[in-house]
Image (cartoon, rainbow, N blue to C red; front, side, top):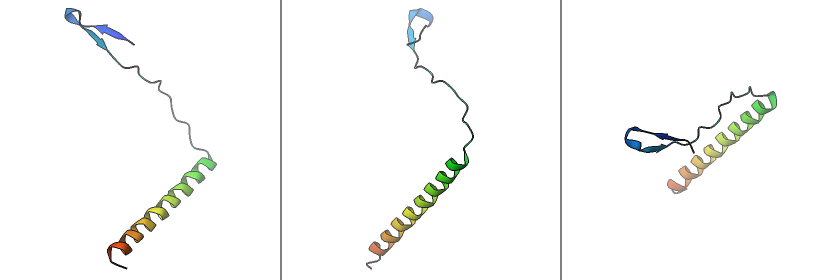
Length: 59
């Protein structure tokens, strides 16, 4: 771990910084998969809201 010495001899311990990299552009198949997951998530959340509404209204 990298240590630095401050005035008076105190040591400071800093966390290692992760390597920085630039993200690559999404491919067509990755875009398609993201769209499918987004639609699936929207359907799931809509269904859960619908079930919650039905249960809370006593139906």
